[in-house]
Image 1 (cartoon, rainbow, N blue to C red):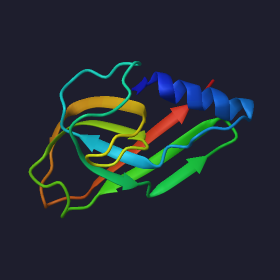
Image 2 (image 1 turned 60 degrees about the vertical axis):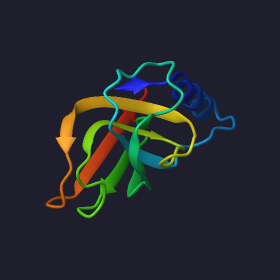
Image 3 (image 1 turned 120 degrees about the horizontal axis):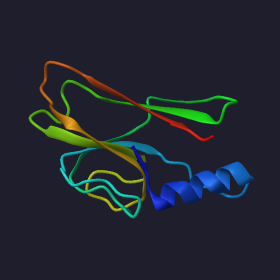
Length: 120
């Protein structure tokens, strides 16, 4: 999992108690590019949705949950997941990206995704 430069800045601001923009979307993409800290966006987004749930704990851990329903993004080969402020086809900011082994999305299953970020 890669925390982008923008993501690290927001986490630092949040921990310092200053103004921080919280991520608003779970993102799934088809691009096979390798994620890096300098990424500012996710390309090839095939689905972006508000979080199903966001949980926090006193241990500075945040758990983001998102879901692609069985009827959504069928036929896509999902290669990246992330969180940010982007939506499908619209520029925004990416905070966390993860490259994954391809998952071929069909209408036979929902895809539930969790990203857990912990700062120590």
